[in-house]
Image (cartoon, rainbow, N blue to C red; front, side, top):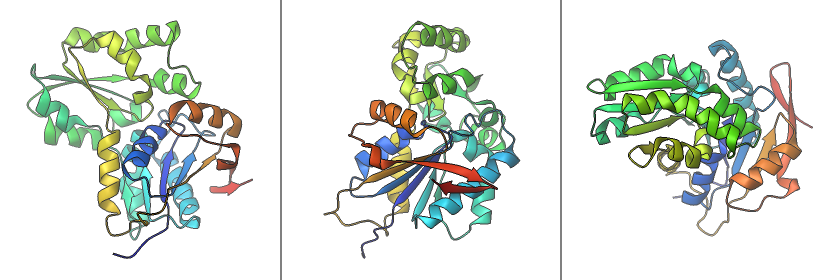
Length: 275
């Protein structure tokens, strides 16, 4: 197998995709990564599928300028809105998308009731309906839209009384329904697991998709691996405030990040341009 030094590209509407990047770094430590946080457009949840797809086209072109060997759409909302379209638009590119981990939840439930927390776009998408139909037709699926979770994580609020209050509001209906499995249907949500666990209690298992997505990335690049002797490096771009991104990233991933790794980018007529 020849060595492929091209990077893995990961995108999200903001910092949520760092939950995927963190796991990719653990499982694939020899791979370089280019990460794009579209914080200039966050949140994606209220946006139309057409608008999100336009963002994906621009971000894909940006990643191709960086010679990405695979592109990870580390955003459930973007995957639900535009993954099938972006694959059709770039048929020669390998993509890994997100779908809510309903299958393991349905397999593991003892009560026949599972919960899914997601954004509005994800919960109303054809992709989500298909996943439920394929894997959870014989269990009760209770869905809760949690838009403020994304806002809180982007603001760096992952603990404290306000976060607890919002979590109680969102999760109480799921608790009342008697679920025993909770699917995290947004990559921002793993950063709130400690709060979610406190609200739901130990009888509810929380399913974080990050390890499974990282394994899928490993399968997709199986014939395109970097050298085992290479120590992977990560480079970050944001269409928001690089300083704020750096401060949050330092809290959320398990390795040092310096200012030289974080770069400003902006949108110009549908194109991502670095400053």
